[in-house]
Length: 276
View 1 (tube, rainbow, N blue to C red):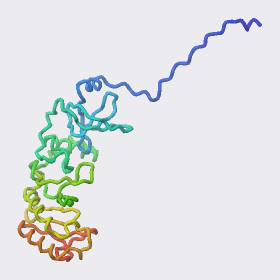
View 2 (view 1 turned 90 degrees about the horizontal axis):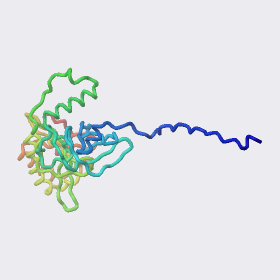
View 3 (view 1 turned 180 degrees about the vertical axis):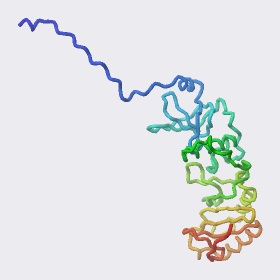
View 4 (view 1 turned 120 degrees about the horizontal axis):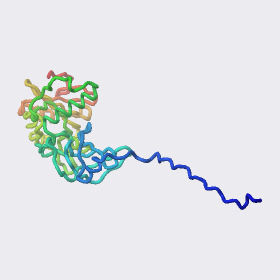
């Protein structure tokens, strides 16, 4: 009976185990970076700035380049990373430059015009080195030409809007929409100059809506314009063939048709393989 009146023994509480969800401590410099804006540390494969937020989470910032210090807009959260757009540029990177093309940022044809040409070469060499698992320090110096007017091949989409307006250009970034361009400083000048006369020709065609895209190829000898024809070749009208022939002669180019199977034909529908 005496045991009924004995003082209960004090039991020790088991030590609390650390939660598995607890995150590792964040470096002091990462915390400091958020007070003065985020410091961009790298570039992703698609040209977005990469950094980490105050929790250590990877953050992709569209429009930012390494060594930019930025404020971001609304974030889109994912399990292991987040995405945002640059809202305010607090301190530009020494490698940041003003894009030459007025379509940059909307047109999806270029992603790095806001990065200097020398920094672009370093970035591309590092990416290739990573893919090949070969140290970039062992490479020879890269060969390169002028940063503008160098591209001799391009594929541009063509579409007629409900308003009747024709649109020629590259797809917008991460979109199926075609961004209308009237010039492109990256294309070789003879190719860029074809845009204006092409805009003039399209409204005159009977089958312009059946052209999916146009591919341009150029070298020192000739320039080819290849029309991606979306219908049976029998629906390519003789009147349109005459218009294209006159246009090609005026522009000093050759025009070819490409079927859905990839077969090339001349404007009369004869299979051929142009030499370029």
